[in-house]
Length: 229
Image (cartoon, rainbow, N blue to C red; front, side, top):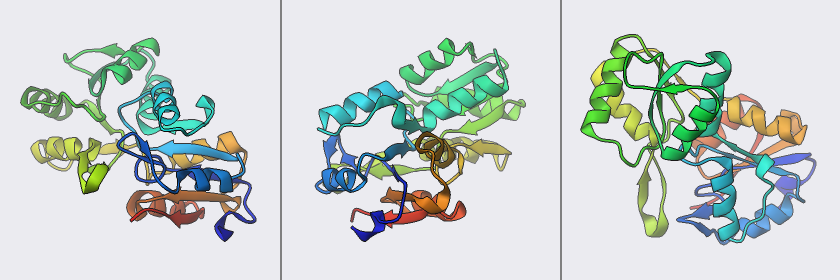
């Protein structure tokens, strides 16, 4: 794997790159070995905390330090807490991310929130769509953890993702200003490089999605290696 030559660190995508359906992909161990232990995982996961992602990877037989995991959902919540301490927030998100938001001092409410945050919410419903769309139309800032509409599932299936839920909200609100945190936006790439202490030209991004992994890497002049089907 000559792509790993002359670099100081590697950023790995997760779903479709290292694992699929909770199982390590056939090339995952070889990729991690080629990185010589100098890697971070930068994932658009908008459902799980770093601890949960670590557990999933361990169950798949992959070893990574917890502090080397950067997840878009966690980064989005952390960003809100940093920029707007104590903000009122409506979240279409997992119980894990909602609990994380509370630990950072954010106040979860559906009544006149300052922020509407959209993650991967398996309980997303018509009522959720109504409350989030109307909160945005009433002036709440819309933050979307990632733009992915699906990610690869086992045996050629697709797994609905955050972007699909966000698209339904934007279909109701029309074109409104909003922020996207995950790839291809630069935030998670920059966070991963900070952990590795690398510069873009000495970093390799390994992923399966040219529209997120590849486009984001190109924007920062990071080398990109596509894997998967």
